[in-house]
Image 1 (tube, rainbow, N blue to C red):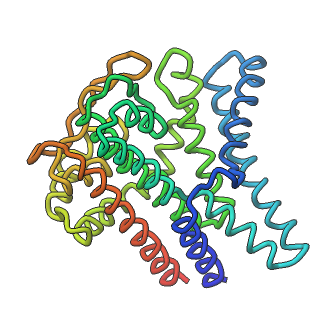
Image 2: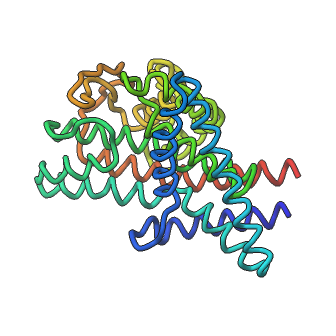
Image 3: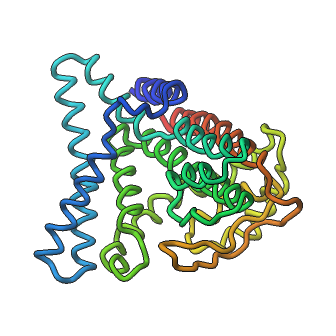
Length: 316
């Protein structure tokens, strides 16, 4: 059974590398997002305590996602075991965002390479939460590298990790947590209490994958021809500077590998947010850093599969 699940995950990973996230393919994350919107409105009408409402919202979405996928795979398998495998592979496949992250970030790169700053800002707005309308080229490059660094954990290492632990249902439950955090996990007036549970749970579930990235990203950097020792050095020095207990690790790893400084001034809904600087500015941020970060991300994704396969086989 261990080998069976491992082969399914590897197949799903390869499928993601080949086709990514085509617009014609239905994506369950969209349905999860719609469910969150509907449940948020319904729960907050009934429960006035926003923290309690947030806990209930998280429970319903995460547990509901897990059992929906679990039951769907079971029903498909009852028709024929091949159908069960196909559905399982599909859900692991949609939990990954290796190629999609590369495609979206490459759009930003291409726009900048053609000196189309307005298009670069527009493309960047598809993958980051910050305001992009007034960013200059260097700030766009920084935002691109930061989102690749963060999503190397959130969109790759974590779903792979949970897929190996609990198959497609757990991988999708993780994506539900991640989606909750991206939708309600804000520290603004509306979500500071309602999104508390989502933000805390996201920190908890990403804790181990983020620590795995402490080893994988420097190794991926070395394979990609970037700074292995500096990646480790900046992780050790700067990983705790970030407000998130997890995002600081991957950002520090990428900053050290590329020899750049990340963090600084950002605007969210026109509100200034100063983030601590991570890394040393051994060189200014430049266009090639986007390509280098994508390369590291790709190598890290393969290392994640290899690492989880080895652990799974050793445990069994």
